[in-house]
Image (cartoon, rainbow, N blue to C red; front, side):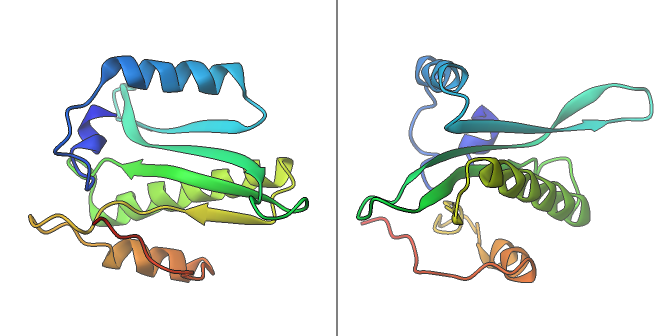
Length: 146
């Protein structure tokens, strides 16, 4: 998590191990409404390493008594050791897993938040946008930090 936190628009904020531990605890306490997914990579010697992870929640739409939506708060992929093709495969695998989980919650939609791309050091959402468009995602607005 620390490695991926540094690559978001919030990377300038100090990572809190205690807050992360509280998030993990809440995921473990309410599994029907939260999902934490991990993608591992295994090398030829059989050693595993983190390739990516995702965190999503499910709940009702705030302005209606009907409709469940899943919100993917984080999809993070190891950009330091994986090449672009493998990064895309991991991203799409995690997204597919979130969609499968959201169906078990009877979600009508999956919202995906993207928090890379606004840092002055060159992070860009273009590749993420193209991947999401290829799997049929529709952009419904944009995120801004003021």
